[in-house]
Amino acid sequence: MPEGSFSFLASEVLNRVSQHAALTTQKQVKTTDAEIEELARALISQKSDAGSQFIYGLQNTGASVEDVYLSYLAHAARKLGTWWEEDRVSLLDVTVGTGRIYAIMRAMADLIDLPDIHHNKTAVFSAVPGETHTLGVRMAADLFRKSGWEIDLKIGMTHDDLVANLAKSNHVLIGLSGGGEHCIVEMARLVVALRISNPKALIFVSGNIVNESREIIEAMDVDAFSNDFEEAQAQMDRLWAQAKATAGQKTGSEHRASL
Image 1 (cartoon, helix red, strand yellow):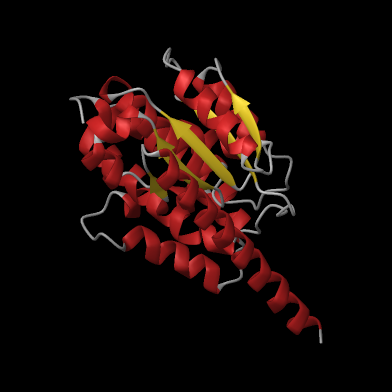
Image 2: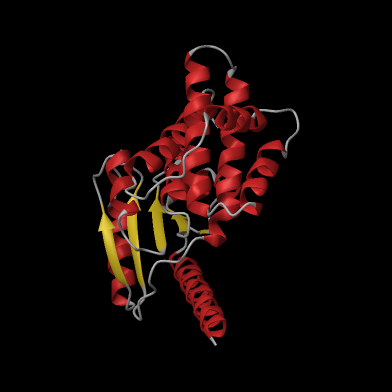
């Protein structure tokens, strides 16, 4: 990744987690400044699991996923951001801390309810914000539609507008396209943002970016990637089946619990 990209991504995590809490209408658990400071320090501790152990302790006392996200991790993210602005912690500290926040949220994603799974196969396709080479994603959308998919195509949106739009949607599958290595940082930023705003979504990456930056794409937190149409179609079919199976397992467990 280009020099400076990690601080860029750290800022994205801090801002996105904080905004996630600020925009919710859900009632949040009251926390003390001492608790948030303890969590923030745990997140940048030399002990790698200190932050996650703090969160496990909250869960053991009955804290919900929403409580952890909105009342603890969001406030801890703000605290780290404030310390960074005041030069009380280093860039390395913030990068480590935000990485651990991200990891905790990803580990808890399975505890969040899935959006409704429709009978018809549906997905949203989007080019990376700022990408001018959009012919490929437009063609892919048309070809998937001919194969029976319902595709919601997002083109020409800013990063923040796209993330906000997708956060309000119930799409389980999100297909992202990039024209090459030139947009790798924006792709990473978008994946990080969507993992926070749409934690249950399955993300697929396509386009020439896969050919030019395959190793970096492999290191990203995505569910599948390909620049070959037939393989992409097979991968998307697999992801859809995976989402339906997960939804079915949840419905089945809820039914058994009600017996």
